[in-house]
Amino acid sequence: MKRIVIIGSKPNANIPDGDVIYCANGAIGYYAENVKRFGKVISILNPDLIHPKKRKNGSSTKEFYERQWLAIVHSRPDKVILLRNNGLLMLTEALRDAGFEAPVLGLSRVERRMLVGRISGSYDPIITKEFFLLPVGKKIRYIGSLCSTYLKRIIDKKKDCGAYFRPSTGVISLIFAIDEYGNDAEYVVAGIGIKNRAQYHDGNNPAQNDLPHHVFADKQVLRRLAGRYRLYTTEQELMPYIPPWNHRS
Image 1 (cartoon, rainbow, N blue to C red):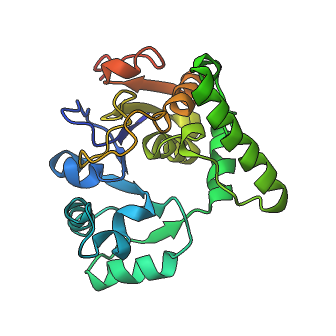
Image 2 (tube, rainbow, N blue to C red; image 1 turned 45 degrees about the vertical axis):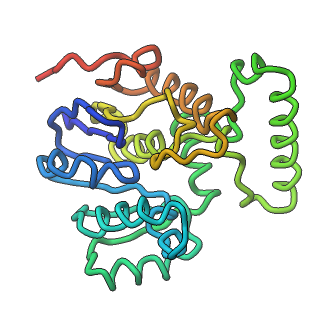
């Protein structure tokens, strides 16, 4: 049976050996030495990580995005999947100009939403019981965001919901892996966490007291996937949702 490993860029990840590795966002650069052990490498990216506008002079996050860009263009995956397809041609040309040769595919917001729903059974916006335990003021604010999403989707089905109600790139990477290999493989998640999601990678978070992105949706999707597939993790903080990896041979 194939072993598929899915990684994010959480520090100090315990990454087991496997046949295929799916790398979420900057993980392909952060864990470049580990990635080399795998025969097949798939990179799943938020397009913002490679968009030229993020590397403009004067931007407070320019250095962070420069590091991300360099790590990605120097990586050698078998395929790249971008989680939005607007600007796909421009981004692909930018990668080609930098010497990046791997195929680049783009997924529309609707395609992403349908994929997550088909594999996990949860279509965004994903609302969990934890949401209703939030303080009243915060709950009212995000109910307004939910209502806005539903109303806008009456006119435009492509309208995305807030990041609070859809899974993270790490969990979507797992969903891509399951879509490809189904029940004929086992899946191990490493370097993907739930805690401290409100902290930006560069430490500059203007909304650190806000509702953390993706957390509620990730928990629900992981629970559902664990009930459907051979899914394990090396991350202690994910073990309430999916079983621990016990170094199976």
